[in-house]
Length: 242
Image 1 (spheres, rainbow, N blue to C red):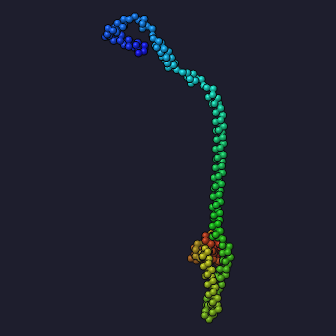
Image 2 (image 1 turned 30 degrees about the vertical axis):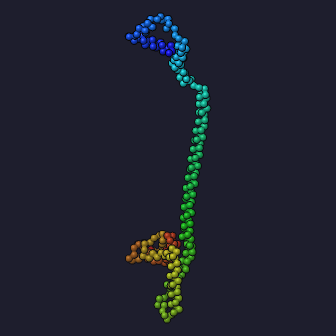
Image 3 (image 1 turned 45 degrees about the vertical axis):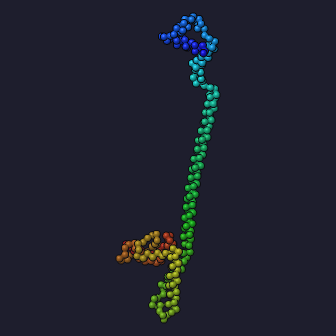
């Protein structure tokens, strides 16, 4: 048993109210025997003292003393200009991005508009590519119409087979020509007894006609034609005067 354990045991026995005679006799020994600690206890004292001193005294840190390390200050001093430079570069890149995006959107819109215009022109070319050819054929149709109108109906008899065959041939040619016109979207405009329309008709004269409302087409000098929705030739008409 160590000296420290013996000291603790003696303290416990002295504090007890009832002790045995052996203990009292042991306790009657002179205190000089217990006043000097043993060598083991002397060796343990520095251990407790050093431990208590190390635990009781806190270590001082740079944060508690208020001092800043030189490396941190130096690092902060170098970071600020770098951040400012990076921010300026970022703003410049954002500006360039916005400019390029604006140019791209404008170019995209212009390309889309051009595509729509070209598509419309191609469609119009397919539909109205024969417009000039139709206008030339209209003169042929007018000649055939005048030819059939000039033949007197009373002369068309079996007794005059040559005139009859010629008239029938002209009539059939005119009918076939009008079928070709209709097949390609060329339709006649005959506005007799209709309201005058300046988009489709061309007025040659005005005259007073009883029973006709003012602005009504009363005479058609030449039939007009439309190619789909486009006027190839307006109808030449006379309009009632109010």
